[in-house]
Structure formats: C-alpha cells, structure tokens
Amino acid sequence: MATQLAFEAGEVRRRFWTVEEVYRMTEAGVFAADEHIELLEGELYTVTPPGKDHIRQVDRLVSAFADLAARRRAILRVQSPVNLGEQDLPEPDLALLKPSEDFYLQGARASDVLLVIEVSATSLSFDLNQKVPRYAAAGVPEVWIVDLQESVVWVFREPAEGGYRLRQTVRPGETLAPLAFPDHEIIALT
Image (cartoon, rainbow, N blue to C red; front, side, top):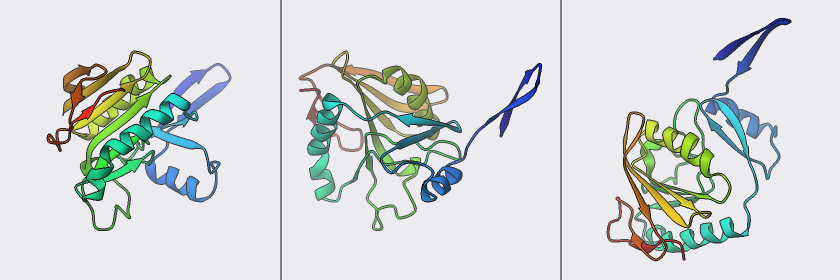
C-alpha cells in the first residue's frame, strides 16, 4: 500500500509495512537487538528507552499482576508485541492475555488480550492519539494509560468505532480492577 505525493521533480511514494514484513526484518537482523520497534497503521516507530520512573511503574505493575500469572488466570507480557491486524504491531508496556497452553507460540493477537497497559512519561500524546485508537479498532476490551506527568491512570473500556465508549480517570491512591478480573483491585500510582 503506497500513498502518492506529487512533487515537481517526480513522484514520491510513502511505503507502508505489514506485520509479516516487520517480523521478517527483525529475524534478518535489520533492527538492533535492543531497538524497540512498533508498527501502527503500517508506519514504523522507534520507541525511546524508558526512564527510571517508567521502569519503576512497569515493575510495580508486573508485581501487582504477577499472582494472576502464577495462578494461571492470565499470561503477563511485558514490552512484547501484540498483533492487532495486518499493519498494527504495538509493544505495550504490559498486556494481560487469556491463558494459553503454548504461551502464544504463534504470537498474541487482539482477541487474546484482556488488558493493555501503556506507561507514559513523555509519550502521552502518541499513546492517546495513535495507540488507543488502534487498540479500539482491533477490539481490545480495555486499555490503561498510566500518565506519569499528570499522575493519573486513563482507563478506556468498551471499544467502538472511532474509540472507546467509556473513559475514566483514576487518581493516585484510588483503586481499580481490570474488567476481566474485578476481584483483583490494585492501587493506582503510588
């Protein structure tokens, strides 16, 4: 799929990529081993390395959800790709997936996701305007954006055309629980 842009000197085409092409490039070593690449609507994005606050929040969330994985109620994925369709392969900071005997040997898809969490220190606009709509379009039932700048968690539920029907703001010290695990409350941003 290419978008044509006309210029005086000729024609320039914008190249869009597919999930399959990104996997092949990764296996061929096109990207550095420590380079985090995300594909959204066919465009490749390089994700900057996380800072200390970001790492701390991801570790805190892993700890908060580890018992769900230990009891095999969910698979906990950290900064790993989720295939949302032919041209969408984000790497959420954390994803809770439905249990799977083979631990998604062929890769996790949107229909496998119970909850996606993005921790945002400097990427809030990108997460809200690029990633959240892609998660909604793919039918991911719930997305949390941990906004480290404003010290809130943006909760998105009920995917619909054009976004999520429900949006909730959770402040530090308040509790929240995933839709898939209403009995599993955690305290927001400590």
